[in-house]
Length: 286
Image (tube, rainbow, N blue to C red):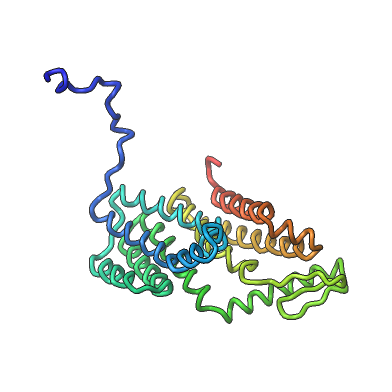
């Protein structure tokens, strides 16, 4: 019995450096509420996709693309750092109100509540926690805007179709544009849809870049180094998406490859690489 009560040898003890960090009591509740809000705005589409097509349909859900997930991950990392540093704060009344909103079975209500509660948390917090809250609030606002802003989305899709037609006409003058549909003389054509629009991935990419530079990498806290990377990333992603639409327009084989698993994942990988490159732009240690 006495041997069983002896302390562990020093090599068997868990070092303090690898022990799990303890978050402050004021930071745990806002962190959990923000994550619950993000999950709630996707809960309805997730359940419908699982019921109709199984787990494979989850890959096609808006809000679960690679850039959306990057924005989510960097926002959570910034929130976690802020909570450890004691900078994550939120008034109790805002948490109670947001929790009551989450009881409403509506993704739009959850998105609006996430945007509002995230803004309150960002206002009350400091440092990395503030930018993490901005990231989650931005994801809610993007979801809300893409769902309600159908007229704006249609206008942007029309502009992208016209830009694709203008560039394609240099190589194939016979290409025909009818609304968002482009057709070649051989009958092959594409329709520019919401999933192919820059509105689908550009907002979360720019949001992820802001949170990465200010909340995770802590760049630009003393000088305005955010505008140039945002403009560079925006132009690069718009040009990349135009090149993708041109590739899909070339032939049925190019469309099948570009819309297939390999082409779609390659496009997402390049976009993610551009976000990280823009985040590292101007770093002293880069």
